[in-house]
Length: 132
Length: 260
Image 1 (cartoon, rainbow over the protein chains, first blue to last red):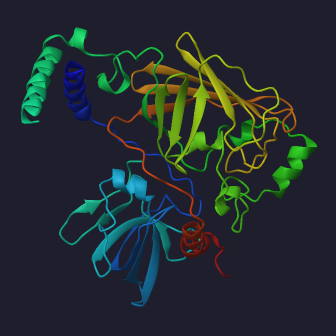
Image 2: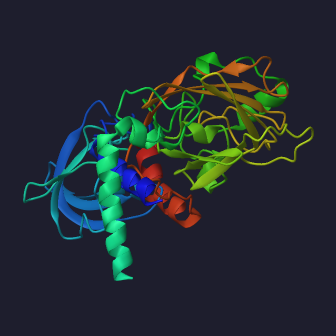
Image 3: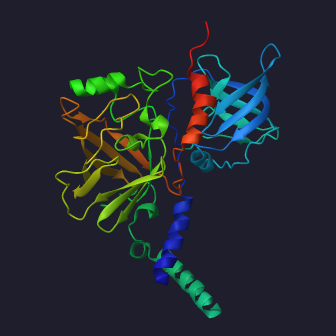
């Protein structure tokens, strides 16, 4: 019994050392223009940790200086957890820069997943969600 | 108690040393424990697998490959208002938008992982999407002759050399085959083939036979699943209140046509 247990532990540790390659599947929602990613900077107003996709809401100034509240689709809590996020990864009041695929219809809505999407924080750390 | 702990630790150290010294003797040939690209364990699909290269917008076959529909199926297809594909439009009626079970086989094409667990007499599949699961019976039983309808069907499997072949039946007609709105009937019968090309790669093909809906069987292009060592299945339930909020705050604003 212990022989098997010891073997299992050694092999589990070995298994953890096997790197997982990048896995990215194209987000299929045609509402977003994934050919033209943009980066917007602003202040987080709300972070919703919920299925089917977590959501970030943030105030950002448009090119005329007016404040617009953006709605940003991210990924499911499960996918975010596999990308090292927690429910506290984004907080209201934080300044962030989000790279997103904007809605084709021009509404202040975007998708920040995929291989190009990312959130950059003032201290330089970056959160992505490209590992499904 | 303490002496037992010490005994266990010593035993673990001895066992670990033995495993390293005699790897061929000590290592069981199970799925997660082999290095990448080594030969696959025969007849073992255990592990967390990830479908490659497609998102939630695709289904088992491209729209162009779908065979002619029967009048029954065409009427259903025309009534479907999908959120994806060439007929996508806001205000759709995809059943999953109201949290109907996504059902089989559509759930096989989700971009979230699924886990295979081999048990006595059956293979279990657990999907992160919806936190759902099914049994594939491998104890030699036959498919029921007149199954009651269900969302995930009734499945049996057997090995043909290195390929795990699964037959399933007993589906209701409430789910779509995929997000583009292709229907199926309660006569749906599905054949799947799982073959490990190598330790980390699972080749998957699926054929749908449904004479009430399609004039001939539909075969998918071959799909690829990759093993994800260390990944765990999380929960991804469809919760009506959350789904509704997401639709109002994200889906609809992103999908409406811009004002002219």
